[in-house]
Image (cartoon, rainbow, N blue to C red; front, side, top):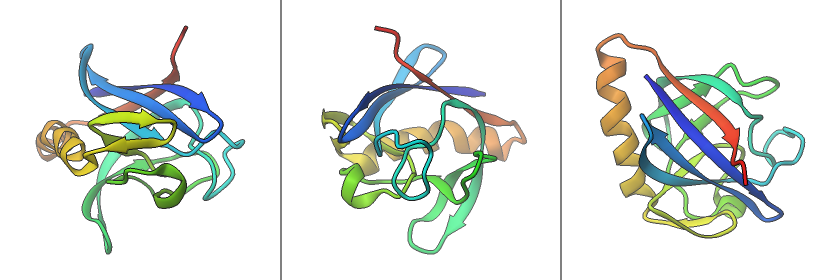
Length: 134
């Protein structure tokens, strides 16, 4: 399974859409691009494997693995990238400003409902991150 995240970069945050087979699942927010610096930047564009990982604060989550120069990147709920993220990806129902969205927990459930059954069946799940072509 391959999910696609298409990004738009802004000074105060990165907004995107996550889709599967050209069908929109949800939107997402991330930190601005700051040269992949730990804790203050979104991760580089590329193709990353997703796995299940238990997190003490967020419970069972999707983790983005093998990110160059980074670790512990999760897909978890947040509605404001600058105040709630440290490099992770937050699904949201709707982006309402750069790096700001709403109904993050609802959007996360949409991704989990799609990815968890595939992972439970032994399938690999991938996230392909690219910028939007305007």
